[in-house]
Length: 128
Image (tube, rainbow, N blue to C red):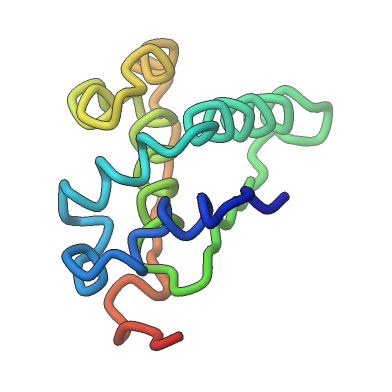
């Protein structure tokens, strides 16, 4: 769904000159992404989907792979991936910094084995 009146572009850190060359490792980028309307709901829904897979009849010992993507992979996808990792590992400090502390609480003592690979985070900025 496109946001009318250019709203989508205002929320894309890539189009902001001060954020363009930063990545999800930089707090201004994380702040911009995590204040995007609907992003916390998207992350919550993704955690719920992962939980559903883990509870499924054939999930025991199986890998659940989740991919987050965006146009350049340096801002939005990277931040969402960091948020998912923080939530699913019960990393309360990181989750709190991202504004999703409550999402991480149920996972503090679950000890899920979560690996995070950023495919594009360290690649050059995509000029578009």
